[in-house]
Image (tube, rainbow, N blue to C red; front, top):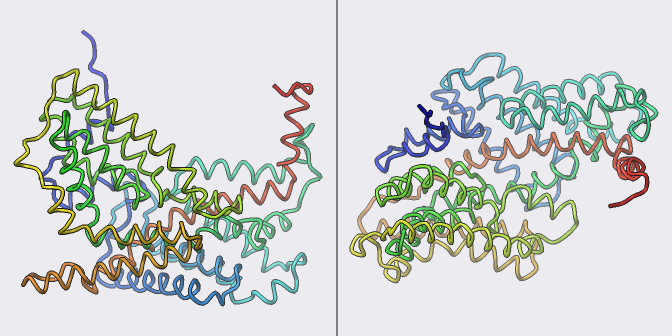
Length: 479
């Protein structure tokens, strides 16, 4: 007898029901996404997390608005907040309970933060003795790098940690390697100080981007989510495509595309819209595997949707020295083609199976819905407008954040005028700050690890050697 194939991810997604409550949804996201497996603190632990998160956001906004903090101090301070929150929020393994905080995590968090604050406090002294670091500088650098590796293992995962570790090993063993991989060799002091204190190492371009506009866009996305724009997008897509052939599947594609404009997480996109589109697709007649695949593929493509396309787009703009709007324009056609392909596949499958859409009387009307809640997309329009006018990504993000706060205030005023309890309060603003601080952790740690790779490449000259070495190995035959 043939065995039934195992589809672990699809099986998990298929079992999401429309009646899933918020707590079950959170637990599901924690199981599927390493970045969502954070601790749920209570009592004094929660207070510490909230205070540090608020301080983090206020510091970032102050640094952006004033521009008075030097790049190295800003990046080191950013990493200090990130390292402390990383160990405060993320357990050592997935199996560990999420409602406790071991003493060693507090110690690791404090040590990690202290290493980067060492740069902030001693910045002028470090600049004066650049290239002639003392033993304390070396010890702090070694400890800081090791703590960064541990936080990467917990939150980002082993692949990037292994790659960065391989590059680090290469810095020490390269003098023993033959051919174009050979370099003259570097001491422990030279390697760790180059990586830790130099702007070509951990505090390089990736962290520079992360500590400026990436953080602001993550804060913007958290604000948009809190104002309820996600549900508005889903209702809007239902009104447009819900009644067409294979309606729920088309709604999944369209809503994932729209949610992707404000969300950098494929998993949260999948869970957010998939919790109702997948059961509806199955009820309509799609196979469970196909329903799960449609939602997963569409949600993954959400990261291609301008104007917010995840950290990679910002790093591309920073590394290439191009305006962010140039990267946005380049992404429009691939994004449209991606979702058009999925949409056509869904349509053809629906026609093949003879699947109908949802009854018209069960769907929201487009015009009344847009007239009632269309103001929710104003922050997104404002960001696109300022980017098109040639403003920087930082300026556009700040204007978007201000617009989000204005929309949240408008929603509360409408609620009060209607005799309802306000849905956007000061508590929501605190929640947004905590979410933004938590969401930046994985991005910042990944950027720091990328900085290690870049630092080794610049130190050893591997970048230039690699190109020449490949040509040599090919005996000069470029093809």
